[in-house]
Length: 352
Image (cartoon, rainbow, N blue to C red):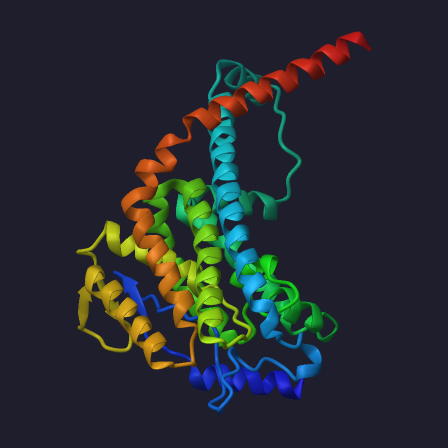
């Protein structure tokens, strides 16, 4: 616990604390990456003693990067396929609820005095959930998962597993799944709080533009793409090391938001009365990360930030038009498969 408390102090002392928001305060997300200034450039934040971490093997970096590319393509494709199926099921469920049969059933149950056997707490949760907008319905589950992972970091028995699977490193033995899991991973409370704060700040606007299914698909894909950018930069610079944090995925949302709403006014919470356009904000952040990469700044994972922002920017220009707008054939295939499976199940029941 002594070493872990040192990490918390390092992250708090070294954290970038610019807070940004849309008509309310938000923040600039950051993804932990720190390298000691030595002749040998060992990448990544020093999370724990070497005994608790996989020893980086530079010979694994080339094959690890190839695995990273393959995993990113497969994961992003599977994510958007899953989001398309989710949207189909959501629409189907909504239509079913609004059907005449559902209305008749609900009316009959009401006349009979039937009530759901729910406690007051469950009713309050249902009311709260139903009042959330599309973006908030994505944010709160994401925040919950991040909170669970944050708690796991502080359980001594789980730390070895956390270092192995919740830190992205192209030279580690486990390369692929940590690219995804690390986007939910925070060790310091400040790191976790700032990233969730900015995610909440922009989730409603992005949710209104994309809907919850496409929002989640872009967020998860942006996180993995940012990990790929981080891996590629580490391999190119020969500086393997662990990274963690949700800021790559959040930068994807920020890139999308600032492209869709370039004239939206953002502000720095610590400088009252000073505001700037979203277009200026994303350009400034991307330039800062590009300079950080060129100058070798090693406090943050600038490559992950820049990769996430570029993904969000490109998705804003091409994603809804060329990806999401062409999901209808997939929905039809899923509808046909679902219908065929249901028919077979009904047939087997009749045979029995």
